[in-house]
Length: 56
Image (cartoon, rainbow, N blue to C red; front, top):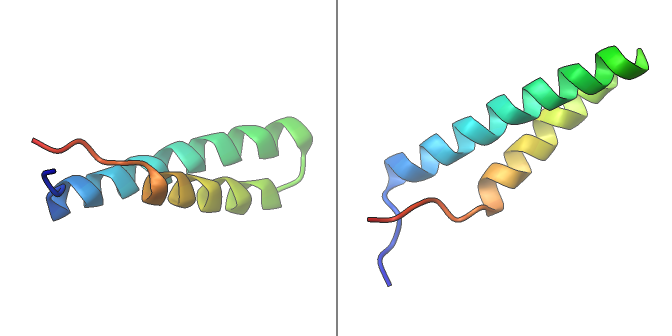
């Protein structure tokens, strides 16, 4: 089984962080509670860390 490259892993974490930030901001604007932004970033980091990055 091929191991993912570190650049693919880094890209996966960056994508997770961006998606988490967008979701966190959207939920915080919807609810009016600004701490959802931080929660969204943390969830995005966690999702980026546990998702398997594409390997070639």
